[in-house]
Image (tube, rainbow, N blue to C red; front, top):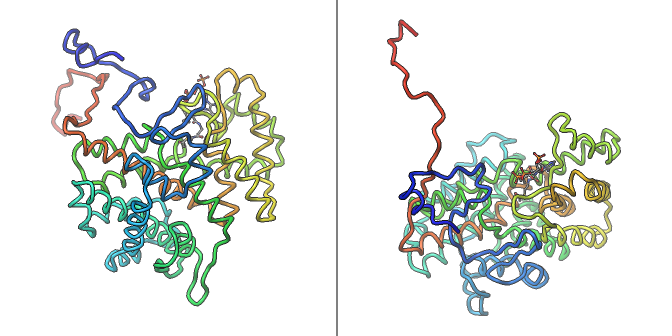
Length: 402
Ligand code: ACO
């Protein structure tokens, strides 16, 4: 690595790297990716091992605190999640102000920021114990807010969390229970959602995580920093891609178009279409999460005895692209978003909640990155430079002459 500060001091040069394609913004000990070999590790542990063995909550603790939790850690953190699952009653009033059909991502980002006003935990988040409490508050309430955002978007009453069920079960309860009818999720759905969430738990310096670090570098609090992450995640080139994939597959199915024809359109950039759920800045080989999710989607549909024509179409489309020179030359492979929507659909989650689910999954990574900045005594505020390309010598004119 080149020491840019030294280079700048010696030469006055500024590095310009479009989209930060080759710029390291920090040193981090959270997540390791080898994009050429298709390797992903949380705190040194291969994602395949975590995926087969951990729940989302265990993976979250690992990502945030750097080691696998002991039984005591697990129990303490579970208790913290349960104790903090309820939203402040005053926060519920904010939901009355959102219009029905408001996008749940808009509600989630606003309400996570609002947590800073309602939750004293965030203001004491300095030592390890208080940071653990604040992390539990955020993880737990983000899930409650997400379910409430959905209920609010469909005009149904908000459902309170339960104190006797685990993280994922509790989320599904708040999503699908209605007054006088308790929803009981199947073990298969719970397992699949745990897997979906933990596969999203961190992914080093992606757009939303870099945003969280940027905000955190000004010493903003954990909740404010993570609400910025939600906004960055929203776009279709990042977390919004899981929605875009399903919309793309539905469009192809409705039009009756052959998948090869769609691949041809993508190659020719007709109507600006891209193959959504394909390509990645870092993976120039397969994305290991997408491999796990493809297998999980197949198992889930079989276990639930449901067929989804979109899974067959997705498989066909992926196979057509993977054998096409355009995708081979550019090393474009399915990313995490390609199959994740199939899983969320099978569980019964509506499409406009897909990116919200990604946000809940990514929360541990955002918190861990916030903590890494917070714990670094030598941390410097993030402040990139620019190359100015506008005019430099323009005369001011009075209004009458403009
Ligand atoms: N479909 C068609 N062509 C593509 C795609 C795609 N999905 N992705 C990249 N390409 C092409 C580019 O047009 C470029 O072609 P060119 O060299 O002829 O100009 C070439 O492949 C290289 O792409 P990059 O510019 O290196 O891609 P970049 O790293 O800037 O962007 C991104 C990565 C945003 C993920 C991109 O691949 C994309 O838009 N994919 C679709 C959206 C998507 O799935 N996003 C989710 C990403 S994963 C996540 O956030 C969880």
